[in-house]
Image (cartoon, rainbow, N blue to C red):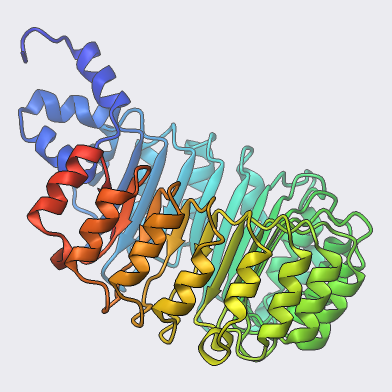
Length: 466
């Protein structure tokens, strides 16, 4: 077989087959020829480095991947190896379009070299250190669409302030996605983004663990002028969330369709945004244990009755009555997530009424509601005949009885997650496999899969996911 197939045919086979990592390793061991052809046909590569410096053969290894367009590198060491890696990448991967380096921090000169050697780069995820004097190097990437920046180290405001006054570029950045992490007060180099990003192109804006935003005035002008922003994510950003939400509410062109806020909000600014914005939210994802109450839910039901996805995590301050009222308004809802919600643990019966008003739900997530029991769950699940995906992870109060109700009422289920459900046993897993004709993905502990269950899964092409 090895002599019959020419290089081009083998390359085409390797290029078309989405080989998992373990299969790729096996293929590379067949012969040197197969290893060379496999590398030359690989377009996406993820590497995890465990040593302090790249191996001397690392550039040669990268050069063998002539079709490489996406590269992700992580490291188990905290030493600074990123500059060496970037130098190797710049000289070996001219066709690269996506690069993610979770090692760091990087220096300016290797980044400038990267922009010259990899002109097709459209997505870049990197770590930079303080003091950060400039982001002008971004202008050197002509095709850059997605940027993810993480800042580390101590803040030196005296060094950073200078860029506050000179952050301008001759050509606007055509970024579609900006993701920032670790921004602190005094990181004024970030203003380069607010002053030089094309308002028309930006679609996604994300902040994580951020305490600053650069210059407030520059950012306010920027966010009020965004014409096509449709996705906003705020994770652990309590210090800046009021500024962002108030300015976004004043945006006359508000096209936001997806909003995510985790671990740090402000009740008043969130309520003001919900009341004043003219956007048409389609997806709302909130994890605000102490900052989300019934007033917000009533406003959501009043303002966003076309919402398609609602995800609430750890909602300690909301009541079952508010959720039932919300269910009456959101008749178009297709995804509902109530994860680790005290209202489920403390108010029995409301789930049944909620389910009766949400019959279009296709994705239901009730994970980590430890007091959810068979009787209440069975009563509500009978209303979800169109369900495609069900997540019950960590619902330790459910038993095999609940799975009988699932199989009876949800014949269209394609994916079920029942990891860490201590009350569900091997027999229940077998029952699900045999009685859900559309099931394709199952998440369950390996010890709960009998030999018979494994055979049935193989016959029905059901995949176990961790």
